[in-house]
Image (tube, rainbow, N blue to C red):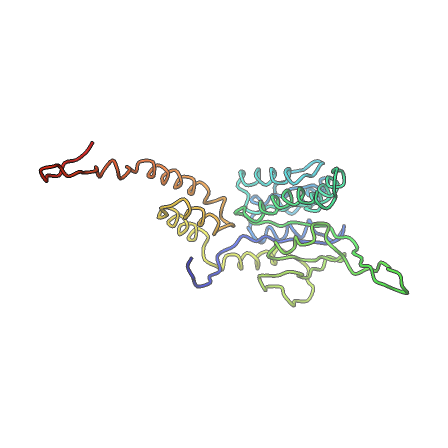
Amino acid sequence: MKLRTSERKQAKIKMALQGSAGSGKTMSALLLAKGIVGDYSKVAIVDSEHGSADLYAHLGDYNVLTLEAPFSPEKYMKAIDVCLKAGMEIVILDSLSHSWEYLLDYHSKMAGNSFTNWSKITPIQNSLVNKILQSPIHFIATMRTKQDYVLNQKDGKFVPEKVGLKAIQRNDLDFEFTLVFDIDIKHFATSSKDRTNLFSDRPEFKITEGTGTVIRDWCNSGKKVNTLLEEIDTEINQCETLEGLRHIYGKYPNYQIQIKDAVIKRKAEIENIVSQVVPNEQIIKSTKTSQNGTISSTE
């Protein structure tokens, strides 16, 4: 356990756009993606919106991976793997709401106690979220919104009242993202979550390619990821115990995909060293004193 000075690393943005149908989420995501990576050939859009991704082909030659129902989280994760293997630098998940609707439908059809059944649903949802957070590329997730209500007591009765819009996804999902833009029907955006502090307290604005460029500069302003990975690699190679390896692997959750092979390799090396250790009794032979006072070894 060791204290260190805080230091912001270069980052891969994990952000979300939420808005109602027709608010311009898909086009906004594409403009952001171009600004972040600078080249549409490195942009992939995972499309569960019935081919809507192709409506903006005039913007450039980005890549499209079309999903067909049912929109299970496992299907999204496989799509992400395809994009990673193809060398994409940013993936747009359009729309992440479909995976949640799939899980809600799956939960409604499960037998048994509805409350305890959520313990089976949550790990599936978390697997997709972790896939997004731990992949070494940028992500933009779009989410549909719907009218949200609360029950307020009026004249002795509970009456539903509108309290704004709510994303069609798990309630706390926005906490997982670094940046969340809310887009209204006139295509104006405001930030409801912003760890970058680039858009906090800023008046509503329209998303452009320049918005993505600003985000890219923020991502690149920290310590280079390659330098960090070199430091982690050195830490792994200097580790001498399996417990130490477990600690290193758990210390860098955002880079576990990149360091997994190095950890497995070092684990094998440590286990090989341990297997070759000669027991003390094979090196230091027991001795006994003979009757005439001399020392002799016992085999």
